[in-house]
Image (tube, rainbow, N blue to C red; front, side):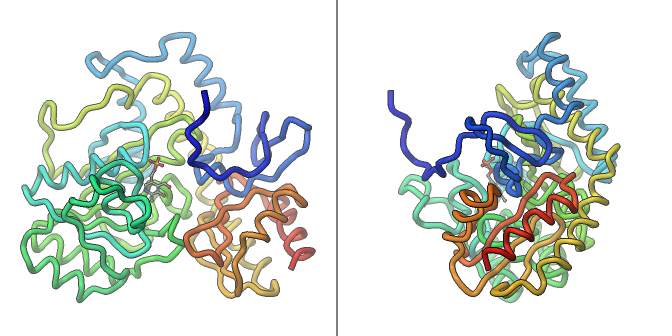
Length: 375
Ligand code: PLP
């Protein structure tokens, strides 16, 4: 059987990985500054993570959400503590970022019984029906997904948001605190705080999509915490399981659950929780959010004078180098000639850097040496 051919692939076949490095089948070693799209948070095959999953697998890997699973509460407790959100939110566990966003917009609509969603230009929220309809990319929206009541507005245009909310039918506003796929643009603190104010005044849910920016990637547990706002709903996923499919939605205590409101077969399985708990333990014990801040500062110092670099975008280890030209060729040279994985974005001039949160200065130096040779 053929694979349904939807992914343009690089000609690299990783077969082994450790920390910030992967090896292909020929034994060539690659520096991973992309983390499989911002997923690898604590480094590939981290010993704590491996032991937790192996141990759990030999106990019980899965049962449904119809039984008691104390691992879910352990995960929730550790997540609440490390994120600082434990007092104010409850968590619903699912498996992917798109699913987290589906649940987020659904919870909002249940809560205020309205349906229109405001999303933003260049935003990306996933590929499932609701999530893709709030994503600003017509190419990936099928006719069946095009009928949701969604309004896409320019980022940071507070007057446009006010005008739409004034119409009275807006259920939620969904914003990435740092745009990932779009290319590292960010809402300003003033914009986010004003959006928080008008959404509260008008019974509109504010959803901060932390699927990519959460779990320490920005240097704080959630990127919106740089802006001193409290969202109603926080979808998260990528870094949560270091590659094990796990997602979640933090839902503010002002929104009450009822039996059957949400559900999933796979979300919150024993194995997923074991992976998720190990990730939280390693982020905490390794003080990885501090490492993110330190490496961010070091990275910026190193790249500032590189020829052709127009701008350094993003926060923490969710970074973008914007060049004067398209970077497709540069990415190919980095991967094939210098054995370094980086990412691209909708903004074709942007090189995306999403390394594991425990990347070191020495790893960054490897990248800088390659860039200096190439530019
Ligand atoms: N939201 C954001 C901000 C993302 O960056 C992504 C994936 O890139 C998603 C949602 C979708 O996540 P998933 O691919 O796990 O469904």
